[in-house]
Length: 364
Image (cartoon, rainbow, N blue to C red; front, side):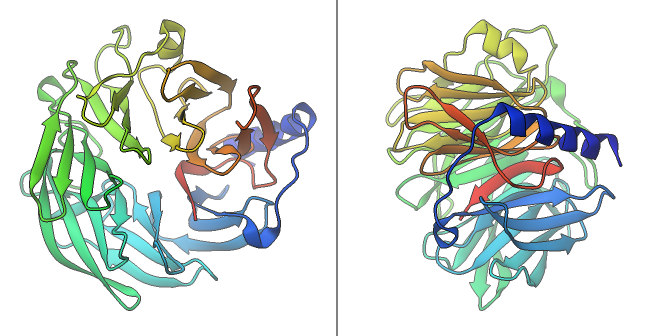
C-alpha cells in the first residue's frame, strides 16, 4: 500500500466517525460525477460515479488527465490531458467506452481544459504553440458522430492559457491566461520575471472583447467559475516569494473591472500561494474554493464575501455545485458533500473511493 492510499483509507475511517449520514436521492436522479483518478499502482483512469458510490465506468487511459467536460445533450465527455499532454479522451458516459483518443496537431499541446459549445457541435480547448512557447491558442474542434476533428484555432490573446468557460450568453468565452511560458514536453516555468497573466473575454469568432490583468505581475490566473448572472471568479497561483501578501481570488461582476475578492489574512496565508478549483452555486449565491497546499476548503457568500465555511480536507481537489451545495474530492481522503441549504453548513462523507482523485470534477 502506498502512503497516499494509506492516508486515503485512514481518512475514510475518521470520516465515518466524524460526519453524520446523508440521505441520497434516487439513483437515477443522482448526478454523474466525472473526474480523473489514479489507482495505487499509478495507472490513470477516466471515471464516472454516482454520488451513492456506484461506479458507472472506470476507463484506463494512457496519460494523466486534468479537467473533464460533458457534452450538453449527448452521453459524451472529454477528459482533457494534463499539461503538456498531446492526448485527450472522448468517453461514452453510459458504459465508459473510449470513443476517440484526440491528438493535437504537430507543434501544439493541451493545457488541461476545454468546453463544448451549447449546441454540442463544437469544442474549444486551450493549447500551447510549441513553435512560439507560451503563445496561447484556442483549438476549435467539430463533433462529427463520435469523433472530434480540429478545424481551426483562435488566439487566446495571452500567454499560457489554462481554463476557459462560457459566459451566460453561450457565445463569449472567458479565458484564464496563466502568463507562464513552457517549452514542449515540459512543465518548467521559463519567464517568471516577465509573466503576463490576463483574463480575456473572447467571442466565438475570435473577436477580443476585453483583456484585464491583476496588479501583481507574478499572480497567475488559472481557474475559473461563472455564475448565471455573468459574475466571473478566478483562482490564482502566485509564483513570487512565499512571504508576499498577495490575494489569490479575483472577481469580475457584470459591467465592473476585474478586482481582488476580499480575503481575510488568515485565509490567504493558509492557502500557501496556491488555489486549485473554484465553483459557484448560482441559486445559493455561494463561492467555493479548494486550497490543497493548505488542506482547506472555503465557502463564501458570493455577494457579501462573508466566510461561510473554512474546513480541513487533506489534499482537497475538485469542487462542483449540486442542488444541496458542493461536492469536493480529495487526493488523500474521502470525498465530501457540503450541504449549504441552511445557515449552518453540514458536512457529509460520500461513499466514493477514497483518495487519488485528480484536480477537477464535473457533475453531469
